[in-house]
Length: 274
Image (cartoon, rainbow, N blue to C red):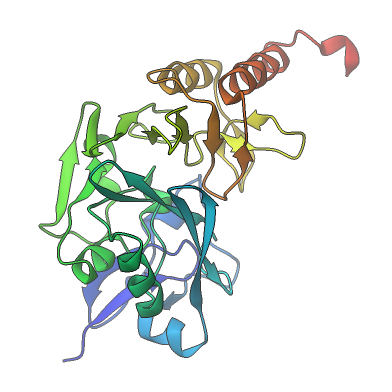
């Protein structure tokens, strides 16, 4: 019997290895994601590579690289490879393993650990770990039930820690209870926040918060405050979201302004304008 490492075409998250794909993807049927009218669809790394999909690696700043699938696969996130003081962290995982990108990552120092901000960004985390020699895949315990492909490489965690030296992981909640951010020192030691989609950089240079971005379900006031307080666990000047949206400087002040603006509208403080 032939088994396949199935990947959901809609969200790009790996599924259990099996002869047949699942009937549905639990991540996509949740209100924070969606299933298109055409229904669920499945693929595999082999099929994606045969279709011409590749991972493009781009330098974001010294010690930080982005990995994006072209053509787009799943949600289309930009994974981030951050250089710690003793090993690299792969944050928000690509949806498939590209052998050429794997070789390029090894030339950049390899990967010592894998961490995703939340279940939408799990990608092919187990497949990547296996391709990298079994490096640990850290999953917030509060989100562990969303893992579709179980494996001994997965390590559940609760309290803030360093998945690699020089990079701290912490749970801020909101979008998912175990929503995770990574605080990276940066090559200049000024502090960089890898925020996933705990917030999203918007066209005006500020950020916004949502329970569901594709379905435009807003975050509650408590959720926004909890997220922003969690961001403040370590100082930061720059911020990246999970689509490579970037705040280049004074990111902490920008986040606080954005949160206050959001909370004021949710509270009805500007209702005279509607």
